[in-house]
Length: 288
Length: 271
Image 1: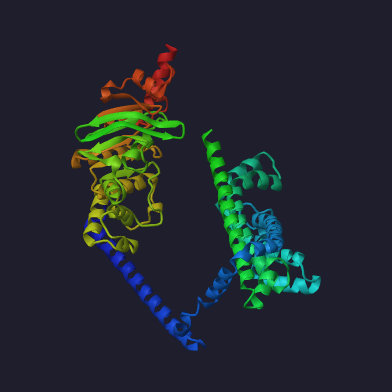
Image 2 (image 1 turned 90 degrees about the vertical axis):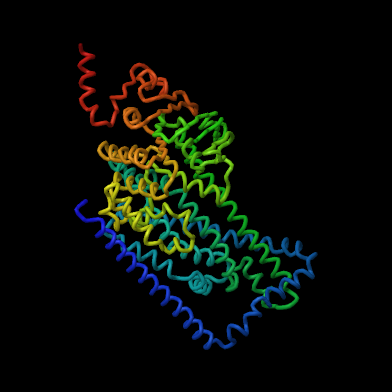
């Protein structure tokens, strides 16, 4: 170990450092060059032009805001008027998150090494999650609306479908970080697969599951609002109407934006409180 | 030199450190012993300002450490190196980079973000590693090293800081006896050769006796013993740990010397 002379160690390390610095320098130069040339190319192809259109980005929000400011007294009435459709939207998001998370939980455990019930079928369950994740909600929703007719049910199924894949991927990453030792312990007492998963894995991963599921709930509220644009009901449908009727309805659009913003803020606050309590709870147990 | 006055740290209703006053007039090697939860770690963490005290003051060379904020506080932290039980290195970075982290307070944020350090610093880091006998691992990732080697990298990082005080929070608690001895020898050398003050939290009494000039015993946040290693008798140790007459430090000692002691004790019992 001490055979290598110090000067040799110094020289070797300096050579390595110089090589690393050279690589990072080249990488940085290539990155800057690509960004610059890509921007120029894209700007040339652009019909309007980036610089000529830049100042107009804020025109639409300014129009909406100024009209909403003029009709400020109407705002509370609009908020009350759209509250029921907001609840419908949240319901779609909540139901789809719950159903999606349940499927995701089972799929993720079946697709994690060391936990899987059938280790050979891991690739199959992985691909199944990939497929559900690859399909955008809006595609599934359009097909289902065509088959089942418009309404909240096809929207819920569409979002749950996508949620299964998206959460399944995140859950299986959580599973990979879970310790396999408790599972081995439960195996040694003769527990079944479902018992091992529910009693050995779930207590370890529950806080992370919950935090991902709450994030997904937030995303799903937005997704279900967007699905309203294609006829799935909820607040998205009202937003589409308010926006497409143009001037004169912008105060309603502003009220709907406010409702959506408030909902996201509330869900975010709620989820951080819940997560805090979960981690704080485990800390409390550990010290007792 | 270093004065701690009426230092208290409360976590809710629970006082981790309770009205501790200590004075050190010259650089020494100091061992702090006590049961888990006695407040040893909290005391060290307050000295480094990783933790803020509830009340009381820490003064070093006439400067009130406990009142420092922002940049001044970070400069103090650079002067007051900390060594952790679990090494607290960046596992995916190479050994020399980890040692160079000791200079972060002196260098600009932008340069260090791109891992750019002056050549003189890099050479010094390798020299320090060589002094601790691990220069051969310079280019390896920290995570590829054994626990004992990682702790020596952590010591190298501390020395790189060129600190006035080195705090070691149970530096050998997760090491085997052989590596524990190497690490303790290194800490002693930092004191003997560089004249730095070393304060180490220790779990094993024989280590405290062998390596330290002064031993401080803590129990439930209070200092219950402050004296020379020679004064640290088994009776005093029982007081510190709140143990009864069945307590024998040889039973769990990690010192290789004590290997033959338990059998002697058993023989004595039989007689």
